[in-house]
Image (tube, rainbow, N blue to C red):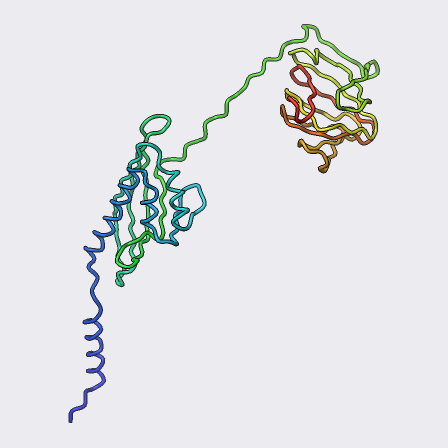
Length: 295
């Protein structure tokens, strides 16, 4: 009896394995992936986010420029919904499709052209993409998708500039000595009595530029309020307390002599004074005080 040698057994095993493992038809699989690309293009043209989402696996990851990645078909459906303006048209051009020897995964690398109608008319974006496909049953599905544009990043439009023309309060230089400065009581509805006002320049109730000083007694507090126009505030003496917000009760920040604050228009704030405190305000009139929540 002739016994088979081990080398003969190994050769037979390899031959059997090759006979039972089907070879991958690369051309056929590449054609199937290109067909998925065509489905993507058609779904974009019809702005059908549901059809696009079905081209992805249930756990797919979609990486969009300038945004966090999104995962799963539901999130990808929503993301694509925001990427398709009117008259959107997508063209995918693969430059390299690689099919794994197992026939279960593939990579598609290529370029894209995306045209659409924007605020300035017809616009075109060009860039590159890389897609990782996975076989689900007999269908290719997108497992990972990333793209980015070849166009340079557009600088943001400059913010609108508002030019404020200061109306002169007179054509003569004026000067007020600290010793001769006159403070008068200032009564404001909703505020406790005790604030004093001195006008240094201009007319606070008019429409031109003004400069005033306010003196607060020690321990004074004022409620949440706002000013229709912006304020430029400088602490001259004492300790000024301030917090931004409409609801009182938050922590108050302390500001010492020499500190400067810019208070935007219509931004509610509240605070008070620790020790007798003097602040100086200048801005464009009229100088108005309105309690928060009122118009």
